Each structure stands twice: as structure tokens, then as C-alpha cells.
Picture (cartoon, rainbow, N blue to C red):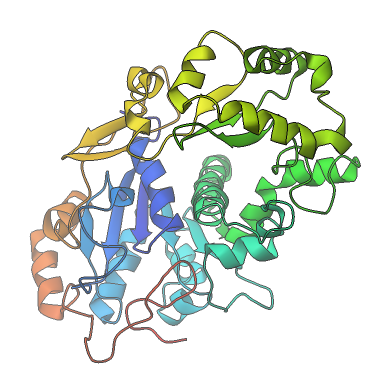
Length: 402
């Protein structure tokens, strides 16, 4: 049993950060019930057994346009510790499922809300994606080589680090406090806030005069020759990052330089020194450099692709990646010595577990029959009318319009 065994979580299905947070909780033993709209379109980014973000929890079909479906959600919330939702601000309220309504039914409920811009502010109702959230947080503009346009770091900073991870942290904070006070509260997790929070160290360096405003001229943004990605003879790349002097000495040694030739903190010479190192690293293949650095603390590692990473000896030894139902995926983390996390089941097809999962959550056979008759689980998606599309805390779901 994982460390969160006994924690009951309702997840209103979405894509990106919400499912990621729910996955983290499920991996660690929480009993998560994923409520999905009926009959999603075939191109729905949230649906399908391929989506490992949906692992570890059953999928229940619920039509939030249907009164019986909404009443079911309210009823489930009465016996839950947490509810996670990712609509635009105000949508759950218009459904009669906002925090005021559900906390009135269950005062200990932790109501977790995942959005891009937050529940308040001029942009709170505006549509957006990871790239937009990290741009106004000041993060995107800081990730660029000198003189080049910013490069977005996939959608890792906004959606997952500053979004889902922050949401999961907020949920656990609220649950811990609830177990002392007996009272739930609203968790307002915004990807802009989370992305800004992740940049705390850069702001600290700025305030200390150690970080220039111009991107690509600093210690960690490609300005320094000793914190860089270099191309090798085979067209591959290596990552070099010996920040501390003792590790920098090792880098110079394996690269064939005396430390005096490559003064580490002469910032004016960083562009020149980078060219010198680049010329050296182009003389050997990626794997040759890895072999040369195998026993040296030079902070030199191969840059691996997604297909290569699971096969790296370190990752294999630790089981960093695992295969479930023939799908390679990252294993649960972090590792706990006594109550480790685990993947209890692969992702389910949308709505595939409706009857048995609701039975596990206390819904009787008679109630299930009544819910079926009332259309609580019925088809919702309208091919003609469509729906809001993306639901990363901004677009509407279940046909609800702003």
C-alpha cells in the first residue's frame, strides 16, 4: 500500500497538468476516480489506453449536462477527500458543482482547481497553453541563446512542473491541514504562478547581481562554456556542467587543457573558451567522450533521446522506466523505503469502468440502474455542435459554454 492509501480523490477529466497530478496521487496509493465525459471524439487528447497520464485509476463516464450526472458528482464528493477540476473559472459554479456547493455537503473536502492564469486576474478567463503561461511568467524569455529567439522547453515548465506538480503539492498541503482542522479549502493552482515559482533561483541570482538581463550570457542559459551542450564527431551531443572548481579541473584534464588556459570565471572570454571546447569535442564521438569521462567527476553525460534513455545502464539499474502493457513509461517517483508507489493498473478506455468503479465507491445496483435510466452516463459529445477542445484549465468541457 502506498503512502496515500485511503485518500479518496475525484478527478474531473482534463488533459495535461490535472491528469499528471492525479497520476502522481494514484501512483502513491490514493484511490482516484476519473470522471470522463461520455463518448469523446476519436482525436480527444485526454482519451485512450495509450495515455500513461491516466494510469492507476478507473474511468467512469459522467454527463455533466445531465442533472443526474451532476447529482452523482455531488454525491461522490460527500465521501471524498479531494476533488480536482480544470475548467475555466466559473464553469463548475454554473454546473452547481462549485466549491461553495460541495463544501456545504462536505466541509472537509479539498477542492483543487487547475488553471493557466488562476481563478482571478485580468487573464483568468482567457484561453492559453503552456507556452503562453511561461511567457508572462518571465521564464520563456529567459531561455534563449544570445541573439536568438526564445526556445520553449517542451511543455514541461508550465503544464507539469509549474502546473501538475504544484497542484499535487497544494492538494497534499490542504489534506494535511484538513486532518488537523477538519475543514477543507480551495487550492488555486495556476501555471503562471507555478512557472514563476520555479524561477525563484534565477530571481535570486538577479537580485545578487549575478544574472544579466540579456539571455544567453549567464551561468545556466548557455552563456558559460562549462555549462553547455556540445556536438560530437558522430553528430550526437554531450552535456557538460562542472560548476564547482574541482569538477571543472577534471573537465579541463579530459579535454586536454590546463586550467590556466580556460579560466573558468573570466566572463569576457566565455564565448572564446566555448569555441575552443567545441572544437575539441568535435574530435570524438559521443560514446568515446562518455568512455573517457567514465571515471572522472567532470559532470559530462551523453544527451540521450527518448528511445535511448530507458536503455542507459543507470536508468536500467534503478528501474527509472518500466513497461506496463507493452508501453514504456517513467516509473513512479520519488522512492519511499517502506511504502513505495506503484502502478496498479494501465490507463482505461474512457468510461470503461463505470459500473464496477462506482460500486466500489458505494453506489448500489439500484442506484446504478436509476442513473442509467436518467442518462447520467449517456452520450454527450455532439459531432455537429462540438465542444471547447483543450481543457488545460481554460477551455470548457461537457458542452458548457462560458
